[in-house]
Length: 450
Ligand code: SF4
Image (cartoon, rainbow, N blue to C red; front, side, top):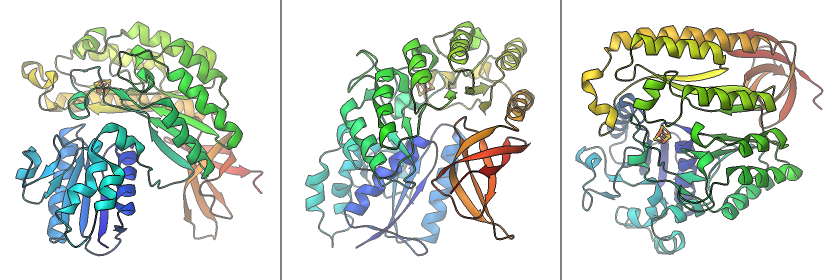
C-alpha cells in the first residue's frame, strides 16, 4: 500500500485535525513513511499570520524538490475549497508543487479524493465507510492520537465573533458545536486507553452549545462537569483552549472551582488593554469587564495561573493606548502571554485600515517593551513556585550523560518543569519539588515515585 508523510503547522487545533487525517489514511491502508520518499505528502497549514503562510509555502516547495514523485495535498486554514487541478479553483492550486487541496471538514472525503490519484488501489469500502464531507463526519473519525496520556478533543469548529484582525471566521466558517454525547464518548474512549489529560479544543470553547450554532443555549459548564466524572476512570486533568471573555460566565468559574479534574490554569485571551483598541478589534468587552472576570476567577481559585493573548501594534494604536496596555499588564500580573505583533490578514477589516498601520520598527519597539513587562511579572510568579511541590505530567524524556534521564512536562498550573530521574517517566504524573527557576523554566527533584 502507499506511504504518507504529514507535516502540521500552527495551533493544537491543527495538530488534532492531523490526527483525524492520519486515522483516515491508515484505515485506508496507507503506512507512515520515515526516511524515504512518500507517495503522499499532506501539509496542514496555518494562516494566523502572513509569516505562517510563507513558512508553509517554503516548506511545500522544498518537499516537492526533495520528493518530486509525491502527491502533495494541502489542508488546514489556507484552503478554501476541496479538489485538485482538474476540478477545483482554490487559489492554492495555481502553485505547481500543490497537487490537491481539501478543507479539513472534508477529511471524510479523502478516500474519494485519493481514488483518482492512486488508481491501483481499491478505496470503495472506505468511500462508503467515512461518508460525505461534512463537519459531522469529520468529528465521527476516530483520531490516531500521538500521545495516549495527553489527548486533544475538538468540541466545536468555526467562530461567529468576527474580530476585525482575524481570518478564522472566513477560513473555518461559522460556529458549529459537536453533540455532547459524542464528545463524552470520545473522552471516555481516550481515558479507557490511558489518557490522563484531555484538552478540549475550539476557537471559542465557552460559547459551546450542544450540537448547534451560537444561537442555541450555551452549556460549556455542563460539558465540563460531565467530562469531570471520568475522574473515577483515571482522568486527572481537563484543560480547554481558546476561551472568549464575552462568554466566560460564572457557571464556568464555579465548575472550574469544584471539579476534580480542573487545573488551576485559565487561558483567556484579552488582546489589548485599551478600550479604544478593543472596540476597533470588535472584541465586545471592556478592560474593566475582563479585569472583573479575572478577579472572580482568582477569588474562587486562589492558586490559578492566568495566560492571555496580546496583539501589539494594531492599526491606530497610539502611544497612549500602548501605555494603557502596559499598565494593564502590570496590574494583571499575567503568568503567560502569547504576544504577537499585528500582521494584516488579507480580506479582514483590519487589513483595510492601511492609513492607520503602525511602522514595523515602532511595532517591534512596542513588542519588546511589552515583553519585558511580561517577563518581569511571569518570572516573579514562577519564583513563588520554588520550594513548592507540583504535579508534573511527563511529556518528554532524554537520556543524560550521567546515566540519568532528563524528564520534563507541565505542572497543573502549566509551568514547564524539568527534573532528573533514574528512568523514562513519559506519560506518568509525578510529584516534583521545585528547587530553582531559570527564565520561564522550573527545575526540580522528584518525590515519592515507585
Ligand atoms: S474570537 Fe478568536 S477565532 Fe473568533 S474571530 Fe476573534 S480571534 Fe478569531
